[in-house]
Length: 162
Length: 74
Length: 247
Picture 1 (cartoon, rainbow over the protein chains, first blue to last red):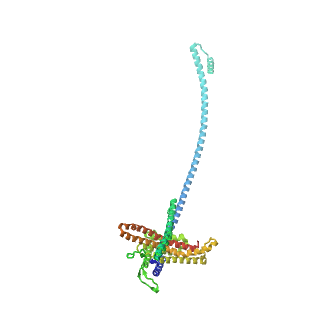
Picture 2: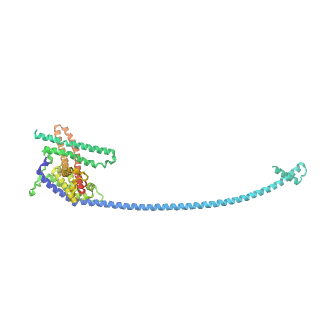
Picture 3: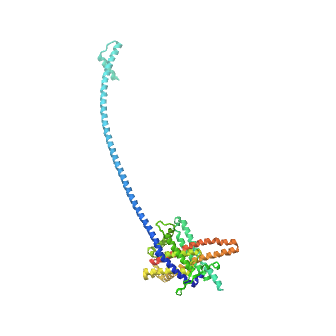
C-alpha cells in the first residue's frame, strides 16, 4: 500500500501542518468572527423583538382588562337602575291598587244603599199600585166597592204568601 | 506452506471482521426500526444517533479490512 | 490509474515540486496541492458566503451559518459552555476532513486516506486534550484512570485498561477515518476495474458493476460526511472528558 511508504510521510506531514495551521488561523481570526457577529446580531434582534412583543401583549391585556371592567361596571349600574325602577313601579302599582279597591268598595256600598232604598220605594209603590189595582179589578168584576184598607190587607197577605 | 499463500489466507481471515460489523449494523438498524415503529412521532428525533452508531460500527469492521490490506500489500 | 490497474494506485503520491529545506523532505506533492485547495475552498466558501451578510440570511449565507451552528451545537451539547474556546479548532477540523473526504470522491487524491495524515490529526487532538486536562486539573487529572465508584480490588485491572484505552484513542480515531476512506475508494476502484474487465468479456456484463458504482458512490458521500462528523463528535467527547473529568 502506498500509504505505508515512509518516504511520503514527511512531505505530507509538513504540508498538513502548514495547511491546517493556515486554516485554523484563517477561521479563528478572520472567518468565524464574521459569522459570529451576524448570528449574535440576529439573536439580539430576535430577543429585542420578542421583548417588544411581550410588552405590547401585556399592554393589550391591560387595555382589555380596563374595557371589561368598564363593561361590567355599566352592567351593574344598569342592573341597579332597573331594580330601582322595578321597585318604584311595584310600589306605585300597589298604592294605586289599594286606592282603587277603596274607592270601589265605597262606590259599591253607596250603590248597594241606593239599590236598597230604591227596592224599598219600589216595594211601597208596588203595594199601592197592587192594592189600587186589586180594588179596581174587584169593583169592575163584582161592582162592589172595596175599601182601600181591606185591599191593602189582602195585597199584604198575597205578598207574604209569595 | 509458502509465505504468499499464508498471506492470502490470513487476509481472508482478517476480512471476517466485516461479518461482525454486519451483525452490528443489522442489530442497530433493526432496533432503530423497532423504535421507529413503536413510536412514530419520535422517528425524527431518533435519526442522528443511528447514523453516528452506523459510522462507529462500520469502522470496527473496517479495522479488519485494514489488517487484511496490511497483510496483502503492506 | 489508467496505466496501473491496481485499486491502490489512486493513493499514490506524486511529487510536483521537490523541496528540501533543512534536510527535511517537504516536496510539494499532489496531496499538498489538494490540502491547499481544500483550505482555499473552505475560506472562500465562508468569506463569500458572509459577504453582504444580512440579518435575514440568503441561501449561500444560510449554508455557511448551517455549518457554523451545526458545529456550535455539537460542541455545546457535548462539552457545555466550557468548550467554547475550542470552537475554531473543531470547526477547522470538521471542515478540513469534510473537504478532503468530499474532494477525494470527485477525482482528486484523498488526503484523509493516508494514515499519516489522519494519525497526525488524531495525535494533535489527543495531545490537546491531554494538555487541557493537565492545565485544568493538574496532577488530579491522573484520577481519570481510576474510575470513581469501581471497587478497590478491581483497580489493578481497571487502571491498566483505562491507560490502554486512553493511549489507543489516537489510533482508533485515525484508523477509523483512514479505513473508511480507503475502503470506499478501493471499492470504487475495484468496481471500476470490474466494469472494464466484465465489459471486455461480454459487453452487457459490464453494466452490472456500472450500476453499482453510483450506489456505492452515494454511500461514500454519506460516509464522507459521517466520518467528518464522527471525528468532530469524538473530539468533543474527549474534550468533555478532559474538561469535566466525568467518566
